[in-house]
Length: 271
Length: 183
Image 1 (cartoon, chains in turn red, green):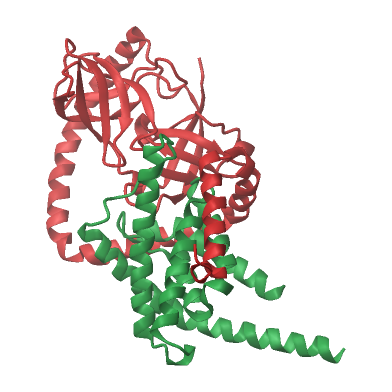
Image 2 (cartoon, chains in turn brown, blue):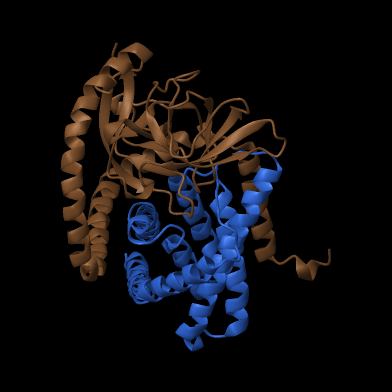
């Protein structure tokens, strides 16, 4: 290459690119863990304050934007409230029935978890957010692989990396995530995996199994530390794989992951 | 040393803001890239020669906070910094003549280039079978234009405070040099 093309700037750039490509290819995660731990620990108090402040700001902005819809929203909520009151009385009866069924099916009652409450203090800023950061880490007994739920036992993902004072949650929508699950109505089993942040897919369901739109999908408790019976979402669409061997179901998660404030890490199931 | 600590703190807090503040205030995919805007700002003033250590540090810091493999953002920032430096030299000979409009154009180009580079890297990773957990949208969609616009607005917002800080740091640097000389 003629020397005029090899300016010191270009040589520096090429050196940076070469070193970084090697780093990426070798991906020595463990080598940078202490450094990541240090910076995450240092950032922890600031992340917490910033996240709470930004949430309040975001809520205020959302409120200001929704003022024009308040009247209609109020009417809708009054109607919804009256229908919910009647639903509560029905649910009380069903609760007893549910407890009996849980016992029969061997599902772990939701109260029997050793939970660690944690605040969300950061999230994936890229489109198709696939992870969250929480303010609890190894100092609170959190380890990689532990499932993370929100209210009412809805699973949102698993701890993928735990540091001293913070941890990373790999959301169900993350394509690296996979959890054994089943249709709560028909008991058809499959694997739930992320669809690049777009949603969650129940995959590898045998053609002979039955899936229905609107059915709830729960964790099956097979082959991992994730307890049985945690809600994932509802089936929105059913399709067949290209090779026609399996069925797939698109699941709508029961919560919006980007709006979460508090989550619970299941440290262990109490028997 | 004081200058270096200030730069490190700026990059650190910008990365914290990028991960903990912007995702709550902006819809998914439109979160502005404050660390990238810092790199573009510094490169447009000092060129790639003087800015590359800051670009490398910024990229590394962001890789740590994004849980991405170390090197991913460094590659993107180094390339953007080189490109911005290249165009900044050609757009204007002297720094004084460089209008904010040209800087805005450079920030827009940098923002687009960064998204494109990350997308290419994500595809390369996928092609190599490396499951590194980087998910990015297709480059050519409506969102990218909105994102570039938001990045440009952020650039305008940080431009004057950073210029003031640069002046202060250079003044402090000169003073401390004088102090050392007279001692």
